[in-house]
Image (tube, rainbow, N blue to C red; front, side):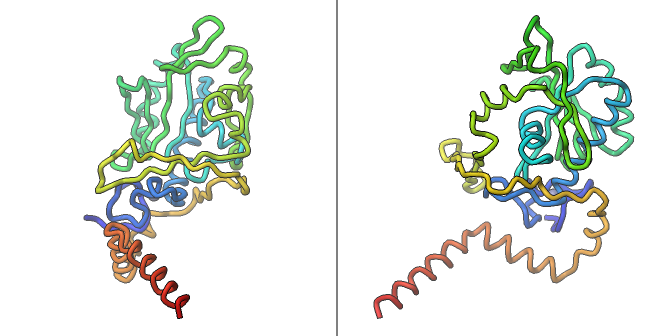
Length: 268
Ligand SMILES: [Zn+2]
């Protein structure tokens, strides 16, 4: 196993890297680490500026759109980004593959999802989904989802960190998919991994009021590759301890022990 402090182009993304202190972070309901958020925003900014340069319309959608409206950036616990393009532009976007891959990103097409996906690298699968939406009369459709034509156009600009990205002009589809209260309260998904087996029955959603609208912290200038090389022996040992505690659920024993001690003291 390769121990890493941050994910880079040459490592798996933190979420799936057992050697990372942020392994399965989203399963534990944690926010995304700064390496992941920075890489995600880098891909998003690169692809959207490329599309703008080639006059290819796109729109940010789903969590990325909600993030733009609610946080003016990435939702702090988001694990991917989404944009939509239209069927008539699909070939033109596909023709940009080499330009995208020259930047060391990696564009792939998946038949099963009907998506083009721009990955951070061949190894690190942090990604931007590029959904291919079809105009059908007064509706725009992708998979089982649908946005009314007049709720999409004219596209509107949304602030996303220090940039503006295009998105649907209406938020109605967000309200119907994420709930009418999605701008004030948050449903954060906590997924429990049990011995690395996904158990859908254990999926739980915790709703809480959003007190802080700050976007996920990012640092697009930071060189995570370099920090990776300076990862010291001490860091490694520390990380190994944290991972062991996490994976063996030793912390549960610790909490039990503290509670048990408290009870003893109360009885005295
Ligand atoms: Zn990461």
